[in-house]
Image (cartoon, rainbow, N blue to C red):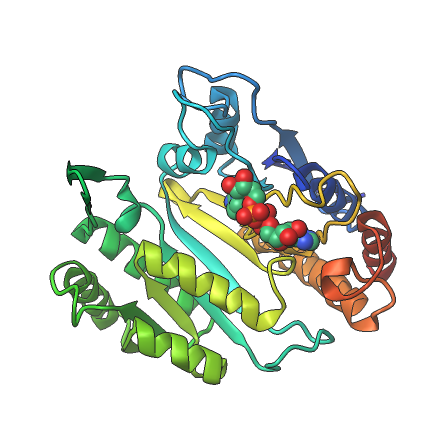
Length: 337
Ligand code: NAD
C-alpha cells in the first residue's frame, strides 16, 4: 500500500441510489490504492437545531475540517420547519461556484464527438435567493439579487480555473440587453476580472444565442461563467450533449478553498435499491476531487479505467443501453485499473 499518510475526506452517501454508487466509489478508489480515508456522514432522521436541517452539525464540521468531500444525491424530506439539504450545504459551507466539466467520453457515441467545455455557475444568489412573495391576489413578485462581491468572486474563479487548466477562453453568459441592471453588473464584474487575465480570451454571449450555438456546435465553447439560474439550465443542456445525467460530474467550490464534489443527478428513487444505477457520474466527481487534491496520477488512472470500460461496451448500465448491474460495472472498472 501507499506509504503516504492518508488524506481525510468527508463522504455523504446520500439518499436513493446514493449509498449504492458511493459503495462503487469506495471500491474503485480502494482498488486504485488512493490514499484517502473517508469520514462517512449520513443525513439525519431529525432536524438538527444547529443547522435547521436534517444535516447534522458534525457532518458540516467534518467538511470544514477536511476541506474536501464527496456528496451523493440528497432528497430533501417534505415538511415544514427545516431547510433544504442542498441549500444548507451551499449556505453553511459558502459553496459559491458550481463547476461542471462536460466532455465527450471516448467510446460512448452521442450526436457530438468533440464536446469539451466547462460551465461555472454562480451558486449563491440570482433568482435563487428565495425572495418571493405575493403583492396582491393574482400578483406575485420574485427578486433577483446580483451583487458585486458574488459576481467578482465567481468571475475570478472562472478565469483562475481557465488559466490553471490550460484553457483559452471564458464566455460570460447573460441577458443584459433585457436585465440591464442585474446582468449588467454581472458583466461589468466579468470584464473587470478579464482585464487581469490578458492571456485568456474573453467574450460575452447572450443566453438565447448561447443555447442555439451549444446545440449546433458545442466546440465553439471552452469555459462558460454565468449567474445561478442560467447555470442551472445550461449545465443540464450540456449534460444532454454528452450522454445524460449518469455521466456528468461536478464540484462545488467554497470559501477558503473547500471542494465538495457531487454528481449532477438526483437520488433516482425509481431505480433505488435495485443495483441498476450508473456510478460513473459520482466516480468522475471523485476524480475531480482527486485532481483538486493534486493526486493527478490516481485521477488519470481511474478516469482511464472508466472510459475504457464504457468504450469496451461489454459492461454498461441500462441508462447507457446495457444490462449490467452497478456492481458488475464497478467490478469491470476495477479489473481495468
Ligand atoms: P433524478 O436525477 O434523481 O432522476 C432523473 C432520471 O434520471 C430518473 O429516471 C433516474 O432514474 C435517472 N438517473 C439519475 N441518475 C442516474 C444514474 N446515476 N444512473 C442511472 N439513471 C439515473 O431527478 P429527480 O427524479 O427529479 O429527483 C429525485 C430526487 O433527487 C428529488 O428528491 C430531488 O430533490 C433530488 N435531487 C437532488 C440533487 C442533489 O442532491 N444534488 C439533484 C437533483 C435532484
